[in-house]
Amino acid sequence: MLDRIKHIFWWLNRLNGLNASDGSVLILTLITLMVVVSLGVSLTCITVSNYHMDQNELDYQAAYYVAEGALRHQLEHMRLIMEELYASGTYDDASSFFDTFVAEVSSVRPPVFKGDSSKRVDANIMLSDFTIRDGSMSITVQATGTVGKISRSLKSTVGIGWAASSVNPVFSYAIFASEGIEINNYGQVYG
Image (cartoon, rainbow, N blue to C red):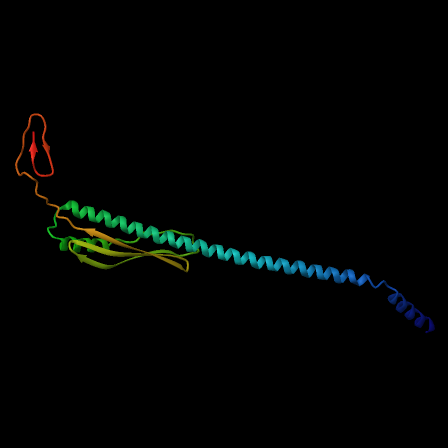
């Protein structure tokens, strides 16, 4: 029994005899590990935040370009319809011309945009403020582009003037000349 007690004291002396700096390495290692983990988590959070901000900025710009494309599409169709109606020459007054113009322009569908499969891309066109005054008409065209949850709108006001397509010629008969004919703005013929 005495040997056992001596053996216990021997172990206690051995444990007390250890150098006090041996545990400090473990503590420094743990502190260093905690600092590295904290920096890693912080950088990961910042990286994810920047990624989401960049994606939102890309969607914001894409929505603007979708709205711009839809607006340009609508304005081009308005120009083509107007030229077609002028070329037909079947309208004698401004009100019938503008009524037909509004009916045809209102039936133009917005373009279909394709984006990546994860986000909805949509374009919407709204025509409003049809104002007719003194043979001219103004229309407000508003195009809205949507990408994901972000929408952007562009607005344009278009003015259209009506001119009678059947302008009477200066002369209602034929002119024959041997050399050439020169007609000025006052309806005078030289030749």
